[in-house]
Length: 179
Image (tube, rainbow, N blue to C red):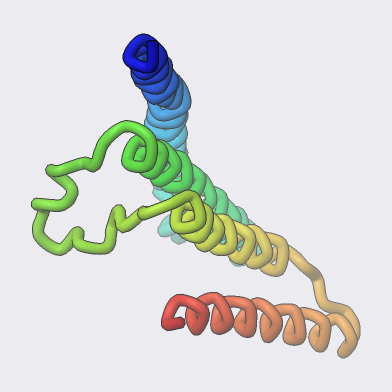
């Protein structure tokens, strides 16, 4: 009688273990989304570059050139943000695959990639994603700062204080890696 229970238990455990493959839906969905965002950011880069042809024109007035420069910096920051989002989706997909399905042997064999996918548990995945999200927030902050018009010394102080707090957050994130 114990044998039958053990066989049933073993089959049940194998079935439960096989359910982990449902995570492949998230892996493939994240990969598709990542590729889509990489594509959109690349298209935005090409379009932005094509708009810059007029920047070198001697006929362009200084005010128009300054406006184009500010708009371009804003676009570059948006593009960086998009690439970071695509990287988050890629890290998420690869991390889920490594945690739930199988280790990626080609990643382990590639030169210089020893720590690229060093994801041992969900906390490792969360930490990697958190760092990229933090970087996205820094980029978004600087996107806003570029367009801020400072009219008082308090405005300058608040921008400087915000920048210092971001630097502190990045330093704390970096030091937590060492421990």
